[in-house]
Length: 70
Image: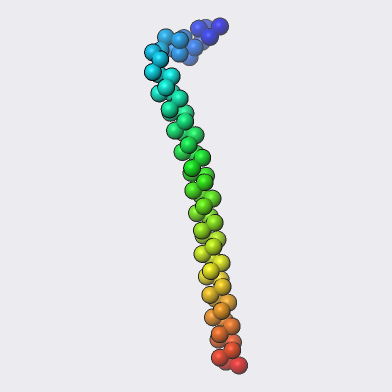
């Protein structure tokens, strides 16, 4: 049944090392997507942290100005 399709015939007539190449391509794609998502998540956390630091500085500056005027 596998030999009735073009893909099946190709796989059965291929040398053994082709399987490793195909597996390597699939693994490489999977890892690229996995680490891309992880990197995006880490970058978003860093951006949020920097934003919180900036907002804290703004609030401290407002408080300092309010005290110096009052």
